Structures are given as structure tokens and as C-alpha cells.
Length: 222
Image (cartoon, rainbow, N blue to C red):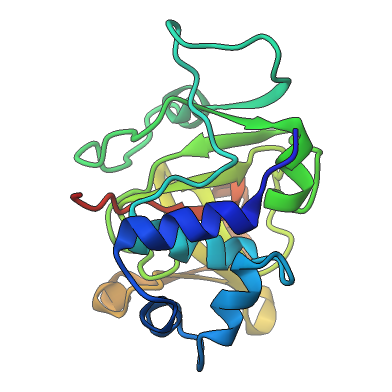
């Protein structure tokens, strides 16, 4: 399936009730030329730009579809990403239950996978809801995140889901001097809860996955 991104951009801007100049300003472009080029099909918007367009206008992204038992077409071949069962993976995890799952599954047309995610290999990729606001602005509280559950070891700096000494966290891990692993929140108001895992404590560290993609969700009234 192909998508007319130029037509989609025009319809999104019209739904927002904006001129090209106004839309360009909201998108962070210096002039309306960039918007005009997208709407004429001369330039293809990046996925980040498409997300901004969707957020500003409230117009849905053209690729994403959530399965409905009453409305499903067998003609469209899709790749399904299911919600990660954190409790099954973490055992006695301690994630924040006040932030419920926003979606239980997500389906993306296979023809759009590479354009959206840069790959068509979704092995081990699961959906997961944020655990509060400790990782803002990297992971907004209202967002969909994709986590690679086949990452079972600390490999490089990034945001991980892990259990350490019986407690489960979503935090940024980074290697420090003498081989220690720094555990930090991206939100500075939680800096006092940052800590360090010493090499002799590595046996107490269990990696459940590494976060890969995030799609902010901020629905607008129309």
C-alpha cells in the first residue's frame, strides 16, 4: 500500500485551520517554503515532522492502525506489536501502576515499516507504557514506546528496563569510570534518586530490554 503524504499534509493543515505560514511556524520551519514543498510532493516529510504535524492538527498519522475486532481488513498485511508483559518478565516488579497501558497492541502495514522505523525486523519488539515522568522529556508520560526485549545485557548508553536488587526501573544506563554503571533519570527533578551500580553488584542486575522508539500521544480537542 502506498500513501499520498502530500495530500495527507494538506488535509492535516486544513484541519488545523492554519495557513502555510502559520503551519511552518508551528513546525519550526523558517519559511512556508518547506510546508509548500511537502504539500506539492517535492519533499518527503521525516517521521519526526509527521508526528509534529499530527500533534498540531489532531490529524492521525497515515500509517498507524490499531486492530479492532469489529473493523479489520484481511487485505492489508500488517506487522503486529503486542504489549510487553512486564509482570511476567520482572516477577515482583515495582513499576508505577498509576500509569496504565495506553494501547494493548499496534499494527503497522508492512509496506510502511522501513519508512516508519527504519527496519522491517521487529523481532523482540514490544509495546510498553511509560512509568511516570522520570524520563521526561525523552519519554513523555503520554506516549507509546517500543522496547527491544531481545537485549538482555547492558551494551551501550541508553534507556533500559531492568531489575536491580529486587526493584524494577526504567532509567538511563551509562558506563562510568572503573567499569561502574550510572543509573540516571532524564528528568532533573529526580536527580536525587540517581545511583551507581558497582562491578561487584552486576550479578544483581537483570536487563529486560532496551527502549528503541517513542511516539508522543497528545490528543487535541476539535
